[in-house]
Length: 490
Image (tube, helix red, strand yellow):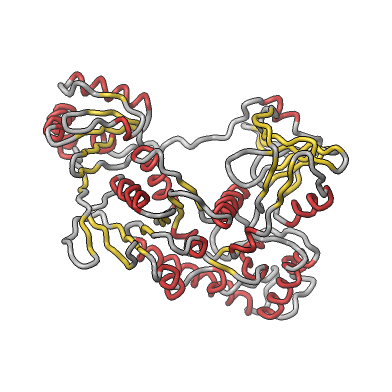
């Protein structure tokens, strides 16, 4: 496959997922897609789920905390990152998409050999080192709790180990008989019911910081080289020296590792597709990183402070500046998306996608939008297939009735793009939360927002609700903090 940077114009949102799927089909292995932010990454994931449902997608999210802050990334974020790094370090087979964000791709990660060598494996029917397992859980960033509820938790009850490893496969229960692994199974953390028996298990680290015998002296040495001797008033230095986790310690990640790499190093031959406006966003992010580092550095050297001084890790050790970013992309195929039409030329391709029609003029004029929509659909059906997207099943049902009432008949309810017929004349209705539609050769996609305008109410976020409240309540012990819906913390 050819290397070099290519500008891919005519790639509006939604249609860019079709182009990404086409790149996956022509690639020998996975393709890295770098979205501007989490919202764009989620939109791409939803678009791929509709347009290319057979395409494997591996997510690599960014930390959900700002640079040089005193808080650690959320456990579920850290676990998701480590699950992806472990899968890549072990060799990702087949085609697919590694979907990440600019913030995640612009940050250095532990080297491949570190992640690959930090796993724990056991086989049912064979001896297991129980003390070694306990030590591994502590070193790899797992947190002990009465019951496991999220990735990175583990619980021990006699000879039973409940471990919630990184990823979406769910927690695993290990049943030890003496020093032999007598059984292993996945289970539902809410109901405690078994879901799947396992013959062997393999766990990845839950954190990018691995507090093993080599990492602690390495951190101490690097910390002293950068900041001088760590005193008793430095809780981070004291905690790590004692082998304990400390809130926000991830912001000194390079001090724990002998070598750092990038996500691109994990897939050295993979093509990279960059979201629209990625370069301005990258420059702005690096400026923000540098500004926050400077502020921390100035505070560190200020006199007369009464709080514990924050000693920031040099930004170049953890984040990619312009030179490092360009070096990471050098020698590989890079596709830069641009939603606007572009004139083809050397290193420039027009993919043929265009922004779809918006019915704002009809809304502002007070005209019947659905007559205008039906007329537009009729015109586009003569040139190819038409797909109208909605945010929910209920909205799709209502839209189907309104279209039929205004002359747009024969609509088919579809689950994904595989059900879109060939040729011309088809009208399909789908659930796909697309902000704006697009037009491409042979395909017109019209979003609900194109027709009805911007949604005033944000999309409902998925809430984690207990499927079995009694099971969740049984996990409480005297002294635990609870939050009442009306009275607050108690």
